[in-house]
Length: 257
Image (cartoon, helix red, strand yellow):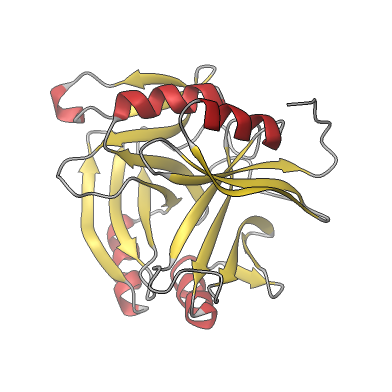
């Protein structure tokens, strides 16, 4: 059983920081069927919600400074962002941005685990998070690639209470429901590549999504492949260089791309 709605200590929101919000919105609209809705209030800083039908499933934020990487991050739902930030420090992580209010929507902070992988905390107020999870067009999995899996297990277990089961591919879970995984970075990863999270979005047909993405100016990170007992996946880059993955569960009927 997987997470299907925002719950405490689990992923609750996906967000892309990009150098070209308009182009990114058009790309993901074609690949994942999202509709962009930008908050025009000056204090919102150009923040855009990405909607599936009328339901918010992800966010898009324009870069505020030159040199920022184009990257997807996700938020973990917490009851107390300030308290959790303190736990992050105690467990050997880093608070990159102290807890900050986001209008009346909630309170967030940016953190990194001991290996340097970045994610955010979200203390909800009027905005809880994604209205849909684990269905086509929505976030369905988050995956940590790190060189020190033992340290990661200790950190995330301490800060969020995550369970870590299985091996060599570890499954993250909370409350008996899985939401992500972890792989050990080995010789397959470029030397110097930092630990990082990859976000997976569910689609009805991985191959069709790959074709649409490349036609829309994206590129393939790794080709579509079947994972026995799991489903079919592919790694992609958007035209600005943001990495993500697409996934279709095993047993889901697929039409031809």
